[in-house]
Length: 80
Image: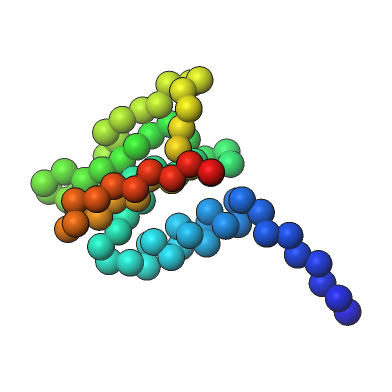
């Protein structure tokens, strides 16, 4: 039996997020999944509690993923 498979943007995003979640230094501050929490950017406070730090407007252009590394003080914003 021959299987056909089409790699989609949603599956690629999910695989990348899974990889990031397995890294100790990096975390996902924002993701723009289909039918997901597409308005909130989250971060941690000094007590390591996660909460909303920014909210996109309804018609505002949003990135697809924002990842953060606090140790290196780097934020990567991905649009695709």
